[in-house]
Image 1: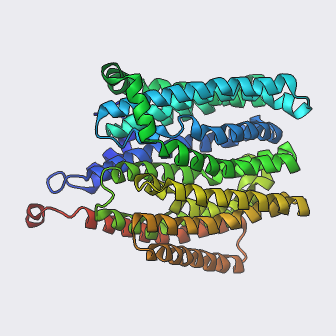
Image 2: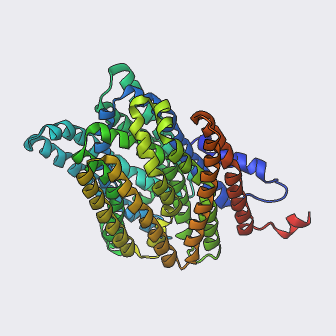
Length: 512
C-alpha cells in the first residue's frame, strides 16, 4: 500500500521503466524500495543544500552558532524521544504487539516533552548568566515541541516501514525540508537575522512532517490501538523489549552526544561565530552521509529484521563496501582539495573558515557514510550492549582529546583535526565489530580500505598532474570532476553486477 503523492517515488519509476524491459524481468522489490527511500532522502537533503547560500547571506555566523548550540542540545536528547521502543515496532509479527509498543512510544515522548519544557524554563528563571538567558528561551521553544513531534514521526516512520509504505516516508521528509527552509528564508528576508527564526522554521518543518504522516497513523496505527490496546499488555511488551531503552537508547544518545559534543566544546572554548562556521561545514559534509546512510540503514533493517540469515545479505554488504568508496568517495576528496574556495564563492567570503573545517571533516564523514548504516546489525542480533560499550568509549576519547587539544593549542582547527582522526579509527573498528556480530567475513573491512585507497590514490595523482600544469582553481575543479567519472562508473558497474547476482533472471526470460 502506498501513501502520498508520486513526487518522491519518481526515481524508482524511471529506474523501472528504463533499466528493465517489462517483458523480460520484474524489478526486484528491494531495488524499487531502496530507490524510493534514497530518492526521498536525496531530495530532502538537496533542498537545504540549494538554499544554504541564501541562508548564509540572510543570517550571520553568530546566529548560526546559537542555532547550532540549540540543535546540539536537541540532537543529544532526540534519540531517547521514545526510548528507542520505536525501533521494536518493526520486529513483532503480531500487529497487536506493535500497537502496545506504539502506546509506550507516545507516552514516553509526551512525558519527555513536558520535561523538555520544565527544565530549560527553570534554568532560564533561576540560573544567572548572559549566555544562559540568551539560549534558554530558544530551548524552551525547541525541546518540548520538537520532542513531541519527533516521537510521532518515529512512530509513523516505523509503521510505514512495517507496512512497506516507503513512498509516504519519502514524501514526509521532502515536505519537512521545503517547509523548514521556506520558513527560515521568509522570516529572515522580512524581519532580519535572528536565531529565533531558525528555530521557528525548524519547528514548522516538524509540524508539516507530522501532517504528511497522518494517513499512516489514521489507517494503520489508530485502528489497531482501538482493537488491541490494554495497560497490562503495554507493560508486558515494555519488559519484553527492555533491551532497547537499556542499550539502544543510550547507544544512540552517546553517538549523538559525540557528534553534537563538538559544538559544545567549541562553544565553551571559542566564539559563537566559530560554532556557526563549524555548523555550516558539518551540514554540507554530512549531506551525503545522512542521505545515503538513512536510506541504506532503513532498508537494511527492514530486510534484516525478517531474515538476518539470508545468504544474500553478506553479498549485498560486500558489494556496498567495495563500490561505496568508488561511488561517493570522490565527493569527499574534492572537498579536501577545494573546500575553502568553494565555501568562499558559494556562501560568501566570511565563511572561509567553514571551508577549512569541511576539508578536515571529509575523510571521517566518508568512513562514517560507508560503515554506520550497519548499526542495525546490533539490534537484530540482540547485541546492543556491545554497540553501547564501543560507542561510549569513542565518545569519551574523541571529545576529551578534542577538548585537550583545543585548550592547549587555542586553535579550533587543531581540535577538529584531532576529533577527525579518532573518528576514522573508530568507524573502522566499528565495522569490524558489526561484521563479527553479523557473522560476515571480516575481510570485507580490508576490501573497504583497499577500495578507498585506490580511489584516493587515483584522485590525488590526477590532481597533482593538473596542479603541475599550472591550472587555476576553477578549471582545476572541472578537471578533477572529469577524473572522477571513470571511478564513479566503476563503482556503478560493481553495484549493477552485484544486483544481477542477487536477483538472477528467470530461465524463461533468458531463453526468450
